[in-house]
Length: 391
Image (tube, rainbow, N blue to C red; front, top):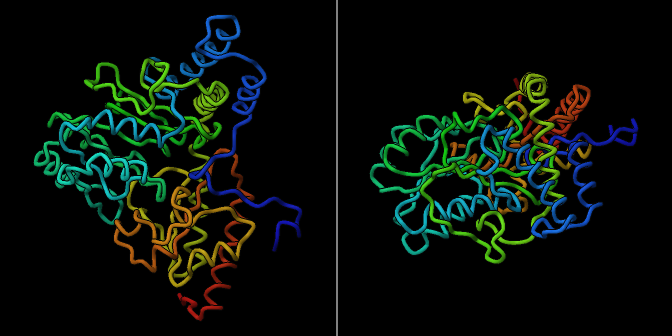
């Protein structure tokens, strides 16, 4: 079956890479692009641009339950992560993070600790993708950590970290806490007042905003030396110089407002579709299993391993399904997923894993198409390779 046969578009299940732009965000971006003005200019047109930025800041703050003044706009979560780690570390002590973090955190941490590698502790996780609490507390106490960075929801498995005890232990030891919430924001309700982290990163294109824009939350009163990555005109209160990306920021704000409005309805609907996808795949494909199934997970993410069926071959056998064999940021990498390896999967199993990620526009009809396509693809690949798994 192909998309041409039934005049249907391929099914997009790669929301963790980039979500389709929401109509509200598209309109806000277009409106800002249709205007002229630099948000730093004092005249009418500059004021119009600044007003769009201010509105977006308020819209994003409402979604996160924080103050608009606690948000710094960036080019995305990668920049926000780098900015958070550089400012939070500032050469003052140790950094504690985990093996399943996004490369934007792991590589930034390694670069900061290049001259003092003993100051960086990268903790293992258990088979469900969670940092063991005892190991974390010991690491924070022994390392003299000034900064902890643990992601809120994993980009490959959707596993949600138990951040409460981590934050409590870190603060008790005098360390700041940063969380990469790129995949969490817009997928589940988030209350920054209750979460009690000091720094949080997000990216608009994960929840229906445009690519190339994100934000860093810095809790008011956080004892943080200002360490900008970009120097220049002092925009964003000196944290991030450069002419503001007004169209992108406007799109981020509009997407945040749409999410805030619709999330209560979206979460159970998307959860139901994810459960349908997982249930049918596990029933119809013997030997398949879901990674991190024992942990709380994002409603629209499932990481499924198909033993003896390489993911690249499976994806090539179902061209009408847009899914991923790992993180989009690691596409083309010659090694298997570092996340799955950290969770204890073998190299072969990690190479036989597909991530399906659903979102606000996913329909039940699309999910049923994907189920059928996946079953056909696994049967085909296992038959060709002579590795068919029997119940």
